[in-house]
Length: 460
Ligand SMILES: Cc1cc2nc3c(=O)[nH]c(=O)nc-3n(C[C@H](O)[C@H](O)[C@H](O)COP(=O)(O)OP(=O)(O)OC[C@H]3O[C@@H](n4cnc5c(N)ncnc54)[C@H](O)[C@@H]3O)c2cc1C
Ligand code: SF4
Image 1 (cartoon, rainbow, N blue to C red):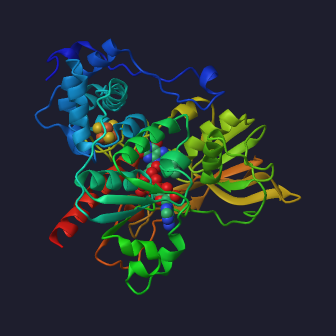
Image 2 (image 1 turned 60 degrees about the vertical axis):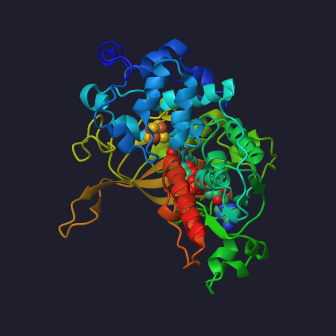
Image 3 (image 1 turned 30 degrees about the vertical axis):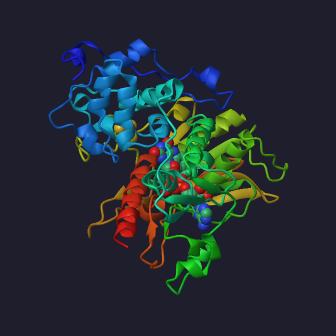
């Protein structure tokens, strides 16, 4: 344990975000970093609890008390080695994990000031790259080949683990670069794409082969003879296949006016913006931009929040975010007691940049002129308990009203993919298996799947 009394004397200190007036004009990462002394002091607050709930809450089982202790002592390399044992990509989770561990931290429960595990994790990962603790491994090959379809965090975690076990791994990706939603969903202001490139370079040097612009989607959905190898000849070369294709279909809102110019799925905007920042060019007709527009984001979750931050940086006139469900409780929710993840109101860096937020709002119709969106008809609603149990019943409240908008972004989640019955050497992981989730869960799922593939191929 670090400093046994630090939690009594050292308050939680977050690195915080760059000031709004500074960050709003660029897509650079918004989060700042602490100096080394403050970072180590933050790590000293970890009490090494008898039952470490942080460890329990982290889907990767990260051993936060162990690496916090090493960090406190300034043993950065040891801290990285401990972190790497359970998390292959701490530079991703350290930036964008919602930090399930922190909400389960005993200090969060008792004082509301959890140990800054996520930021500590990012600091350890960055120091590891800087000081050369991230070394290139040369695993001994076992002669077996595995194909991974999809290069999001789940596919990358599975590919990385299998490669280090000695399998010859090829990742097939339909996009032009690796990362899945890390690259084409999450905005650069949360995760700079150089961080992904750096990791892909390590994986390539360690022997993983990436094949981009290779799409397997249509074939997967038509598989009907339980032989995966019939639809892509090159897959017959592989001893096992891992499917990590995420949740490609977003939930749409098929109400009158959906066809109007100016109504888009959130990812259409987010992925295009990330591609523009990567240097890709789009014609004026193709380009989706919030510049000078009144933007309405439909959906109150994280994807919606990413749309808000993107709209600000593109120079929107205004942003409103509406959500059909009620406003979550502020601060504490008795329905989700510690150490569970608290379902409470979340205010992100993008919300702080300015946004009108409304809850209990149903969307009725998109309105337009000459084929272009001009506004959205919405209505306030209420939720009444269902006497038969189950989902509450929606009831109308108040009169319909019109929100002026010339850009609508639909951020209402993703459909859970269905999969056919695959042959026994085909494994599904990440969001493709669970439905839309989190990066940390996708990584955990990729690691578990790699273990299953290894068990299967070892038996064979
Ligand atoms: C806008 C947005 C913001 C988010 N922000 C966060 C966040 O801050 N923190 C967090 O923890 N989570 C966040 N998430 C969720 C997180 O990104 C996902 O849970 C995670 O990326 C899922 O990983 P995955 O590998 O299963 O799938 P994905 O990341 O979706 O990757 C799937 C990959 O498979 C490829 N693919 C699909 N079909 C085929 C095919 N047929 N052939 C070849 N390749 C194919 C895709 O192109 C893609 O590269 C966010 C999600 C979105 C949409
Ligand atoms: S991956 Fe997320 S939940 Fe796990 S220790 Fe890191 S910040 Fe916490």
